[in-house]
Length: 122
Image (tube, rainbow, N blue to C red; front, side, top):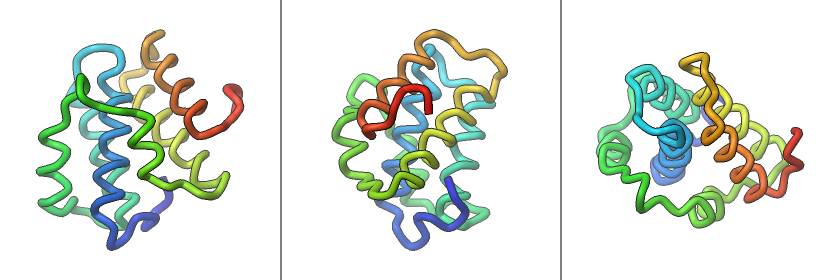
């Protein structure tokens, strides 16, 4: 995500965090490395070095079994192609954080691209 993209918008930052946590857990267990990368991407989008408590609390309650990708992507309301590609780049950063990209992680990224109306190869 771009620096300061969701400044003063903790609700959208929380949604971003959910999508990134879903990417991080697509292959199974959430590792410390991937969790740190998710937090870093959310902080970057907020334009902050510290994630606000309300966002951290929200992310702490994330349950991948209840996550609805379609709803999250719609609520993020990424209107421009650049915003959509920024999300895909952030997902890429998360799923490659441990240098191993599992088939489930790749499949998740493709699902997000489809939700965003992006060609799979972008």
